[in-house]
Image: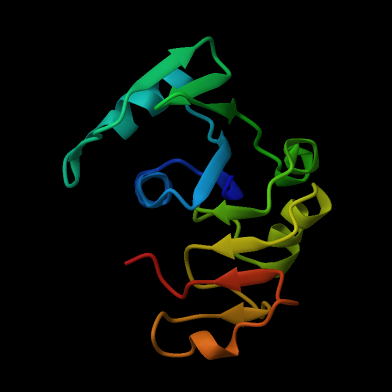
Length: 154
């Protein structure tokens, strides 16, 4: 059992993160929140113009379940991050990949919904706990940091 992940935003960045985490085997993607329907999200995950066809099996069951290589992933369509069921789903952290929620107060909504930590895929608009650039300042990351940016998605 890996680190339990929720992804908020399943555009290009959210789907790329999904692919990387899925392929690593270190993560269990528990839920994806996006306003698009499950069938469209499955198609966009399966066929990518840059990364090509997803190698795994993707099955859509109804409007709320995506099964990827036998693993069920809850599909959510909630606009308000404070209403996401992160606590009920038992996620260890949320990847915020919408590009919309970039201020601390907005990101804290994931915490209030039960996510212990939030990883922002773009630069924050105001101070957060840490902005980490891989191989530059990784040593500054601390366990008590709850809202973290990876500095850029490009």
